Structures are given as C-alpha cells and as structure tokens.
Amino acid sequence: MESVAGAHHDAINAITVSWDGYIYTGSADTTIKVWNLHAEEKKHSLVATLKRHKSAVNALALSADGSVLYSGACDRSVVVWEGGGGHMAATGALRGHTRAILSLAATAEFVCSGSADGTVRVWRRGEDKRYSCLSVLEGHGRPIKSLAMVGVESHIESSSSYLVFSGGMDCDIKVWKLLVPPLEGIM
Image (cartoon, rainbow, N blue to C red; front, side, top):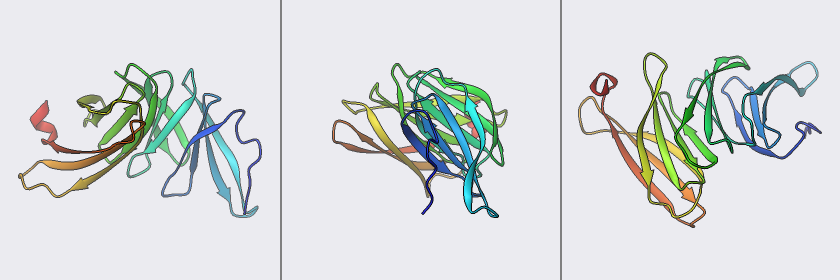
C-alpha cells in the first residue's frame, strides 16, 4: 500500500485515472493535482497543479482517449482541460447550471454534468472543439450526485444512441436515452 500524505490542503472530492496511468485529484482547496508513478521509486509524485476554479472542485471526468479532462466545481462551471501525459491547459468553460456541479461523465464526444440545481446537461464537442448544450434533462427533485454514460446500438442509421444514468439526493435513479443526430445534422 502507498499513501500520499498531504496531497491537498482540503478534502479530496474527486479522482480519475487515465489509461496511461496519470491520476487526477480534485479538491475543496480549488485545485486539481496530477500524479504519476515513478517506477524507480515505486511511488506517485506530483506532476502538475491545475488552477482555474474559484471554489471547491467536486467532480472530474476524462474523455475516452484521456486527452480532455473535465472538472466541475461549486462555481457552477465545467472547465475543459486539454493536453496529455499529465500536462493539461484550460481551453474553456461550460456554463449553464444555476448551482454547483456535483458529477460528470464523459465519452469521446460528449460530457454530461450533474448539478445541485437538479438537472443534467448534455454537452457535445464539435469538430472545431467548441461545445454546445444538446439537452437539459430534468426530473430529479434534488441535487444530482452521480452520473454514468454508455453508448448503445442505435437502430436509426447514422445516429448515435446513449444511455445516461443519474443518481440524485432524491433517492432516485433515472435512465435517460439520448438519440443524437450526426454532427453535420445539427450545425
């Protein structure tokens, strides 16, 4: 067992791991820290500290290839970080929720954000790397604490289909089916 004492100055609220072994931790201290295992020393060491949020970081998610990190915070924003190998730079922010972001889920071209405002927003990354909000999913009576998203087979040619699972503080699980037209179809 390994322990990294004093990794942050406040509670660690989120953690995610990339396919190439980088660990991202989000904290109430407003920072995201990037860690990597040094084989010689057989322990993790700090690679970078990412600062952009002005309040507690509550949620983290990585794109399928690990090149995009999403962070959600009490400041009601989802910050988009791009790069790789643990070196990420903030390239934008997704805004629209009226309360804190509490959960995130990502796929190759989509990210979902769950909020204390009781909604899930579905964001799509375009070919120009700009994001648009495709949908606002409403139905929970309380904050949304957890999200998962998975692609499923679509029976409509050229459309993508996804299931979004949300868990809320209202003690409910919601399953949302999204049928997404091809990117050219929404421009």
